[in-house]
Image 1 (cartoon, rainbow, N blue to C red):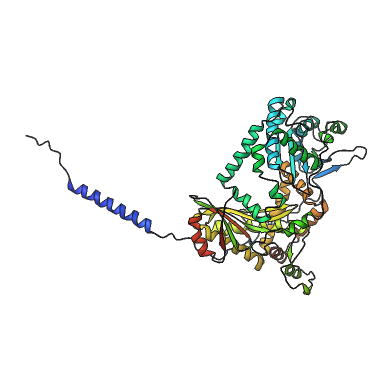
Image 2: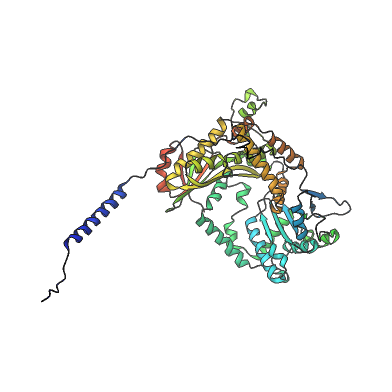
Length: 543
C-alpha cells in the first residue's frame, strides 16, 4: 500500500529561516547606519589655455565684434501727434531675417513704465491672455492664434505675427486696450471666473513646484515695502476680482505707460502703415485717469534707505519629504560700490570718511557691466565656473546657473540650482567658495576671452530672434540706456581685463549674500550646522 502522507523536508525550511534572519539583520544594520554627507573641497577651475590650431584641424577663432548699427530705426513724423513712438526693423545684412519678414509681418505694441512698475501686472497678464482667447473664438481670425504676450514689472508687450497687412494686425492689437475691452459684450468679454481660478491655481502650483522660493527671495532681497513686492501677489484682490476692477487695472496701466509700436521693415510684404488711421483707432486718447506713479527723481534714493542689510543668515523653507534642496544665493548690486574698490580702480577717496563700507553710486552702465559679466563668468551653463566644478567635477547637481536681473529700481545677481539632500551643505559651501575666489584671484586671460566670446555671441544671436530683439530694446528703454550707452558698454566689455573683472567682483559681491534654501529641514540642518557653523539658520513660511 502506498503511503499518501505528504513528505516534509526539514533542510529547505531551515535554509529559509536562515535567509529571513540574514535579511532582518541587514535591515537592522541599515537603519543604524549613520548618513555620511559629501565633504567640502577647494574650488576647481577649468583651463582655457587650449593651444590653437588644435592638431592642425581647428583654425584660431577671431574676436567677435558686436554690430554697431541699431536694430530698430525710429520714425519721426513732426506733422502728426503720434500717441506712440514708431520703430521699424532696421535694414540688416542677414538675408534670413529679411526673408522671414517677407512671409509674415510681426507687429508689436509695447507699454513701458521706466519710473515705476505697473500695478498688478500678474493679474493683467492673465486677463490679456483670456481676452486673446475670447477674441480668437469671437472673430475666428487666424492672426489671433499667433498672439504673444510678455509682461514684466516695467513693460507689457503684445505681438501678432501673420501674413496679413500691418494695418489689420494693428487693429487687432487695439482690441486689447479699448476702454471697455473686458466688459463690453460686443468685443468678446472675458470670463472673470476663469481669471480668478487661474490666479488661485497659480499660487497653489507655485507652492507645489517650489516657485515660492523666488517670492521669498524678492521679499528678503528688497524688503516688503519695495514697489516690486507691493504690486504683485495681491491675494485679497485675487479673491474679490471683478470686471470693473479688472478694467481699472488696465486703464491705470494705459494712463501710466509710454507707448512703442514695432513694425517690420518697409521692404516686407504688406508693411505700408496708415498713420492717420492708426491715430483714429487709438483707444488711449479717451482715458483721463490720473497717473498713480508720478515721476520723481528722489524715488530711487528713498529706496536705498530701506534696503535690507544681509547678515550671515540662511533662510529655510520646509518641504518635508523632498529628495532635493532648492538653492538661491546672490547679491543686490543697486548702484553701489565699496570706497576701497574705488580706490583700487584709481578714484580719489576722502581719507576722512574712515569707514570703507560707505558706498559711491555706480552708473547704470557699470551696474549692467557687473551684472552681465559676473553672472556669466560664474553661472553660465556648461562653461561657467559653478557648472564646471559643482556638476562636472563633483557631481553635486544636474545644473546650476546665474541670473542677472537688471531693472530700473533694483539690480541683482542670483545663482540658483538644486542638489540632493545629502549634498546640501557641500553645494552651498561650493558656491560661497567660488564667489570668494573671484574676488581674490584674477581670472586667466583665456577665461576672459571665453567670457567675451560668450557675451558678444549672445548679443549677436539675440538680434536674429524677433522676440529677443524687442526684449533687448525694451530693456534698454526701461533702464535708460541709449544706443550710445550700449556701444560704450560693448566697448568696455571688449576691453575687459582680469584686473577690471576682479574689481567688479569686489564691488558686486561685497557684504554677505542672501541665501534661501527649500528642502526637508530636519534632514539638512545637521549638515548645514556642520559645514556652515558661523551661519545662523532661520525657518520661514511663505504665505
